Image (cartoon, helix red, strand yellow):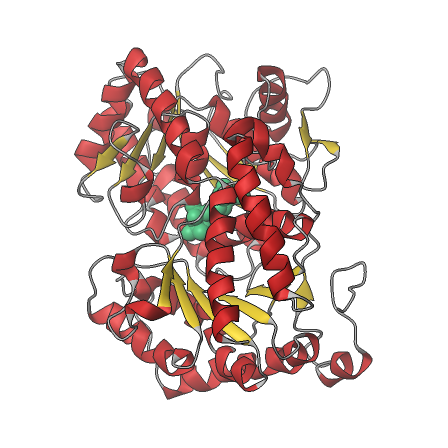
Length: 498
Ligand code: UDP
């Protein structure tokens, strides 16, 4: 096994020099080991005993091999959020698991964002996916592969995440690795855009050993079912994003962020990814008009990357038209600071569109809508801020136009929050009957707003919904279930690749 230096970049003299003009392409994310035992009080000893048993026999089966996760960002978005905890739990179960992040340059991330939008059935920037794009994409893959092939041994298991890494598969297969491509995005019905994306990606994926999708309906027709595992994403109840926070810490964190007025007696605390107690001392970039948030007023939030598919403008418009006149609630739209999410080139444009829309509101309307960009320089603090705002919210919404599986939805349900969310993609699985309100047509602003106002008028129903939602997440979407599904998949792959 290789070791990594402090700044998380792998160091091997030859390769580092080879790409010196672009710098090192591949970095390793440092993840703390997380004991599975801490899940026992929540999910029960039986569930963890089953996982421990399976992990022990898998450990024998996998021997000296390493499992490598490869994606394109260490922060921002659901994949990074999940890897933080899954890698940590797998390691403490004795399975050598690593997480590598590849680098892109030129128009690589514009191409992969185009693929992302098209797999969701939308045109995105409307740009092409032709020979030029393939050439540019391949060049970035080759630059990363030069380093990856130094790290990965023949026989290792490689889990490639999303379109950004699909082009690595062939060379890794040639190298002797067992390769799984996991697609975290998708749409139930195919259309011309999904066809276009798959036409681009398919040549890279013909030889992978297995595929993972979040829902059966996301699997394109050209992939036979025997080659696919369906694994829905999960959350970690102890991560800084989801751990219990007391009311005082919530108030302190929101005050330090700049959402509430006044000074704090002491900074809000949380347990960080490394298991140590840390404090939130950073503030957020906040766009607001007039007074700060009144902690006593009902709060509606959506937390998302600044991405067209999350439809922040639709949330604002529906709130202003239908919720604001009926209630005294406040809306806060929360996203990661756009300068900090490296693989999402559209973020700045979407945020600037949202700000322009906000500035066109009347003063009275603007004073009820706040825009928040959270710093990502410290992932633990960022997560604790998301946690605090989700816990303070009265209603959480997710008005996505398309969604593979919205981790933010599960995060909010875990916190027993009543939700109004679009009935798109994985959200249909995530919000079971009675656990939230599903919006049939994600573009129906009137209905969306009325659903929110309707919920606010029924506090008892909101409580009941929140209780059911929490129980449903506990049963279905905690990391132990996710790891068991991986163990099954990897065991069968090792059986067929002795
Ligand atoms: N997120 C975050 N900080 C932010 C905004 C979002 O940590 O400032 C997280 C959010 O809490 C969730 C993830 O990013 O864990 C988004 O995952 P989701 O599956 O909802 O959407 P994706 O971004 O993957 O499309």
